[in-house]
Structures are given as C-alpha cells and as structure tokens.
Length: 73
Image (cartoon, rainbow, N blue to C red; front, side, top):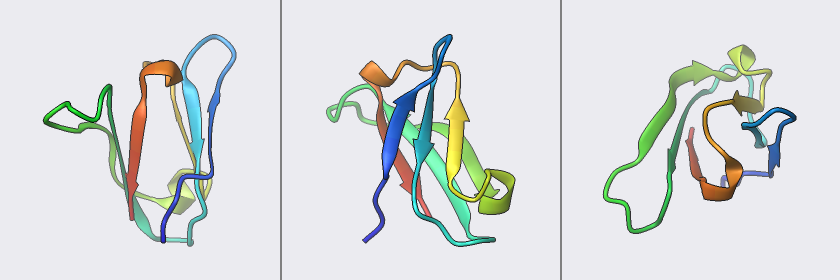
C-alpha cells in the first residue's frame, strides 16, 4: 500500500510532502481543500522521482492546514 510519510510546513509558507518511492517511477501529485470537493487540483504531473529528490515534493503556494494531498505512482 502506498502512503504519504510526512507533510511538513516550510519556513515562509508552503509545505513538503515526503513518501517512500522507487527510482525512475513516475508520480503525480494532487490536492483538494475538502473531501467533498468534486475535483483534484494538480501540483505536478508525470515527474520521475529522481527529478523530485526521489521522495520529496515541495510546494510553496498552498498552506498545509487546508491541504488534502494525493500522490499517484
């Protein structure tokens, strides 16, 4: 089962998502503000893990307090 390991706020705003990954696997990252939202918003699409430090994704436009993330391998 794929799980997100950690979501941490960053100094100055934004967050970093960390998850266990395999090298060269392509991942997509999405978010939504509430489970009842009809659609997921895309952060990144079709990024290989070696382009994302193998297991980390940093994003500076959203606050983790309102974030429901989804990472799709």
